[in-house]
Image (tube, rainbow, N blue to C red; front, side, top):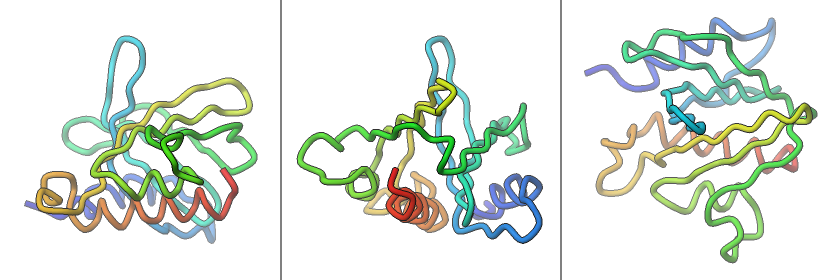
Length: 144
């Protein structure tokens, strides 16, 4: 079986702007009121990219681009339970639910596995862990 990163990276690379650098990629489940879908979450030096995917890890639908100025708020399940920052909550558990609200009112609910620990391979393994760490660092750097 191919590494998760080798499946996700090409999906995100097609969406990069000139000179933009990928810091990490991970897979998440985007949940809404009536459905859920698999998404690639790309972390770059400029923004977060959320791209829906089908079961074959092919792009499905329009990508959502989230530069820091487009993010109004971020919360993570567990962030209110003694954590000082959302990035600390993202890094703590085996799984986390990240809730993003954009400046134009769009709401995204993303569920991610950390990819580490005894069952880390089932949660995406090393590529997932690196992507989640890149996400936590990006959130911290951008004050979200």
